Length: 376
Image (tube, rainbow, N blue to C red):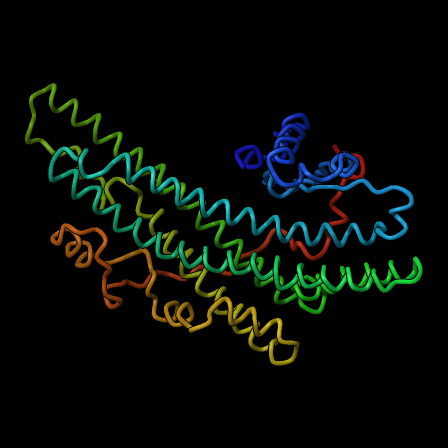
């Protein structure tokens, strides 16, 4: 995680190799034969400007004779497409978990028992209102990511693996084995929405994951600004105590409605939530449209993501917006309960965010970005 968050130009082979070896030893991969583990390596993709380690990192598996007769170079390219989809989901899951951990740590380190007076209580309650709204949106994103991961692992790959074993057992020659393996990969690509006929669905999923990553990045900015605000207040209060200005609170008058956190950060978080609702609704519409024309797998995915229409209804009613109006803020402060949810009518409308432009699609062009001599 921390190593892959660095820029692509700051990655070093020995660090990545050591992390990979440690991951293999600490997972169930350690029980595989040694000749299998020796074939696992790292492949670095060509980096675009601004790419981090998450975008350029890829696992590789060295194939030689006679295995390359079955697992050809074309088959390895399909494996890489599947890997990048799972890898992106794992990155989003890790980012959501990191955002939750950071907010939980901030809440714990600045709990009620450490508040010096009522001013500090009001200051932190204002931020807690925002944190609570972020937690509501984050829980929806976790629901979608977890269900997408479970869908790919169990409904797609596990079922395809069972079919592959059945076909191999009935094979009578090498050509039957090659055909069974090719059918196995094509089935995964088709059911995982990675085939060319599902390009629109795949792009919609990528846009949804992209906006979740943006939301997590903005949450990190929010936490950093909140911690800086708390630190500034503590330093200023210490100076007041040294001067004896016990009633002087003028230093905190220009902190704004969010306790020293810039308003644009809160509004960008709100824009990210609005954009997430938009992308989720678009994904559900595409799934329902293509589910009527395809097999039951798309209808099953639609059911898993929103089986009771809760998320679609909530997004259409702006239930999970981050920005609230002044009266709602005053209500929270008067009630002294930062976790009381505001009524939907108390939300103010902000400007919508433009369309999200993806830097690349994981469905196409993956093989073209691989440096042949960069395998570690």
